[in-house]
Image (cartoon, rainbow, N blue to C red; front, side, top):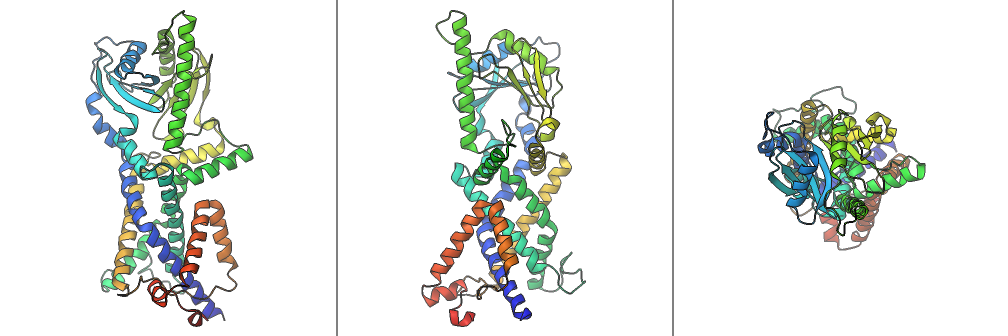
Length: 458
């Protein structure tokens, strides 16, 4: 009895590996390309914005922060100050984020003359577009859900692939740790696929796991679990999706405008200011510059009455991100270091930094790039294998067999994955229901899809 059951296990896993690959290959290729581009965000942005570095000399007098912010606000009609970015070098143009509602515009201002050198809507910047293409296909929550579903099935594809290709009863390294390159095309592509998968599977699973906090369904699920367990943080340090980020910007904009209106009323003015009090911004920026936070450092106006200004490091390496609150007179209210955050935030922040290639600099970028190239090779080799072996009149899926007996381990694994990744559970249920429904259709469709009639499954 054991031999037939082992064959049933193999066929069932092989079949779901095929279906997972069928769904995932286009998305894995897309995510690998866009993710590979985003890995080199620091180098790409350094090249893009090089014209705004070193625009001033040490001998040239510098404008005060309030004057620079006022120039940026004036360049975008209807805008107010959202964030003032401390320049990493005194000669660099000062970057100021201004906006209205959920719309941010980044403005580069000459530190000496106050001239506006460049401005661009924040979400139109190249690497912001790449970020949204990677995580949401520029389609908001629906795009994020689609990417998340593909990521969940990629986990299934990798796990089933490891099961299928894991060496059994053999100590040979050829075809397992390295490919056999001179044994013909069929074996060549089979070994390329298997060996690549074996080498990159764990790293690819790590990249998927560290990308899930951004996903729409899993991210919401994660926040709900944290809220129920009392481990939620007031503000998470990673994107919750384009829609959630826009809503947060709109709320902060409304709060900043309310504070400026209140300040204007206190001075007997009929119209609200379009910039924060000059003395406050100057004092806060001067104090923020003394904190030694890793750049870039953003200074944001208060959003509530008598509230402090927010100072946040936006370093690419998230474990270096510290934050502070500073009163309008420049007095330091409090500092929160990365080490002070909840351990869940530290774990996720470190994982996100590794995912983005920012944790260990160039070495991290190159390792991640190697994993992404491995995923591309895995996908391309799978297409070649399918194309070479596919029947002329069928999809090429392995024939289905009767339900597995004594398959509690497989059922348990599926339940664990479904609990950990809700969209996987939903899509798996939909796939099983669809397969069961389509089996009742014509014999030709059954043959094309690789389904056997019940008499053949017995």
